[in-house]
Length: 232
Length: 251
Image (tube, rainbow over all chains, first blue to last red; front, side):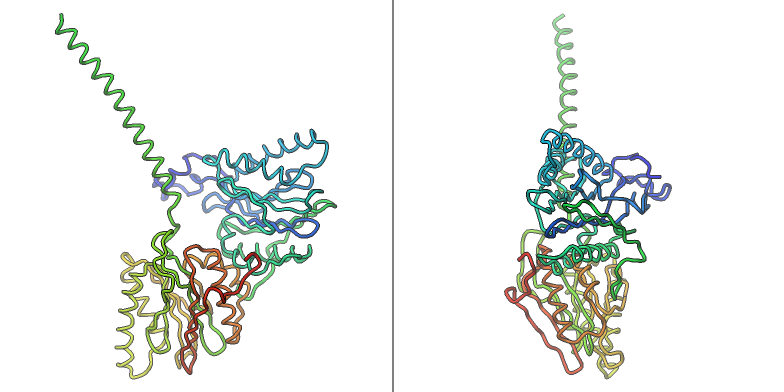
């Protein structure tokens, strides 16, 4: 029951309502999250956790943060839930129109540019970090990251969201070029699990998707099936 | 009639000016608020220092390690080669996260109290004693201090131990621990890679890799890697310069 914003987000720290009302009545709904995307030869693997929070309350513990933009293009959303949903809807519309005009499947770079244009133009109002990933005929599997502020860059592996800080070291040390699809799935699942264990705003289940020429395969790894580490 | 016109003109002008001035001051205030907001983007989250420190227990001893950068704010490196590993007794070392000034004051006090305690007891102090002294100092002065400590060492009673004293004065014993601003980036790595009862070589490689990864992502950690290996026979200080650090896929 995530309530609409009653006070602007930047004023909430000045209100001393903490003893009278629970904090989630004044906080914006945010996908404080962990998202990740990895390229492999023939496609991409994308993954995300499933927690949406309003302050300390988990508004949705089974969120789907992997949003389809087109047949072979997905985006992973992090930041304000409202902002990212609005941007994704707008880009889905623009991309659909563009694809009809072109009469062929759009390029991932096009989708990423549309995200970037919107995020950069409205960077003062928005709080959205997005990873765009997919497969197209021209360049195969690609991952583009559009962080807060509106930069766009292509990377072989990209992590985002609040939980991503905890797994930079793990991703830097474990990523190798030329991994297979199964290796990428295992790598993504492990990295997301590690982030979910340390970040309070990430948790729930791990949602994965593989996008390739053949299409999109989605899977869910439930909490009790997550990989285990000796310290965790 | 001239008087009336003058009075009317004066009061008219005054009204206009008051209106203009109010708007002007309001605009200034709004600009000030905007400036405040822009400044707040650059504020560092939390009170961690620009550093990465860690301590790992292995089979027969502990390794305590840190980077070597001291920074003032986010843009000036005041020292490239500072040693953050402070020896408080023969087999007990401390490393600091937080304000360097606070840390030096506390460790100096702790060193004195520990040596006094060790003379009274006529035996080398326990690692837990050293950690407790730090905890007392941190807890009693929690309003003024902004420093957390990792105390690691070897003693005859319990062998190798690691204690972490956090900002408010909590004392906790752990098989390994990381701290400082750079530690956020390696939580995933150390969670995945740590195994209890590693050998010395494995533990050394683990520490060097973790510190190198943190230094690669955190802009206020850097320089060389300082490691101190504490075992029953003694203490060894290892320095790994920047060009000998492991390189990862994108470097």
